[in-house]
Image (cartoon, rainbow, N blue to C red; front, side, top):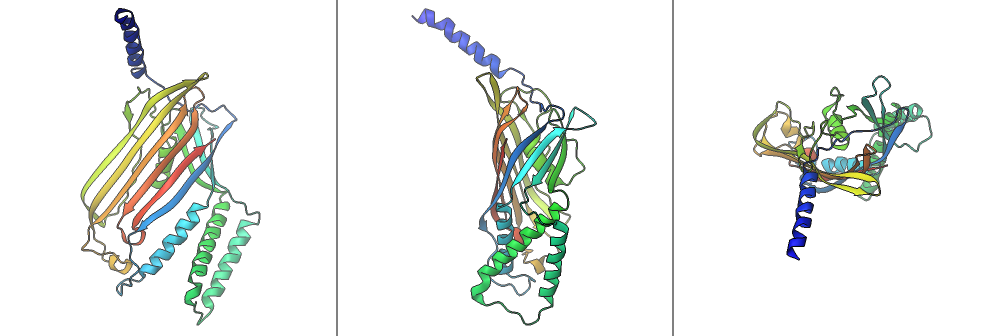
Length: 319
């Protein structure tokens, strides 16, 4: 019995070895004059705040003011819905244009609404001696969040609801390097491919830089992890799907030496650090050349004054 089983085991071993050494091509395959559409989720959740609510006489903002701004931003981000469209560039069939649109259910004229809002803000600012009672603080925060959200939606609507543009090759290389780093990062984590054939388990890097500091920051140490790989190939009902894993993380710590930092509650005697990580799993159809599903989580942790604390953003792409 052992003699009969041995050749079968050797065959399985050979097949497994050949699969791991197979070179796999990941490419976007979008028919000309067609558009690949993804319902896109970018849900921001604030987990923990670094800033205390105690007032600092040297700061132009109180801890309470910081919390109010962050709460409004978090509330505003959590409700926004997006759709991302990918289509062949009209001048080059080897290039793919990417546009992310924000859904805007408002039917009113955006320019008129924006004008009305600005006028209303001017009127409110001219009122004197108006003070809110403590019991109205929750309602005030909700109103501020709603106003900020409506203002953002109206500004975006003036630009055709486009919040992200980019361009990649069919091999997944980013060629629109002229956009802001934040936009390039988003394009990279969602749509960049290795632009070469890779084996199962072979790692490649994204064209990404998550942490940005200016000349006021002096770094003591940093660390980076930038690894993407195909974990396995699933073959089922004529479909061939690559399971792709993302493990991206960046960390820096040092001194933030800004003479104006005290006005914003920054302690010059305290080391400033920031850590950003992105963990994701995507299912890419090799035959159809598109994401079947993509889900990831980006976490940010920092003690940098106003936006310090912990937060995470949940990313999803669903066709």
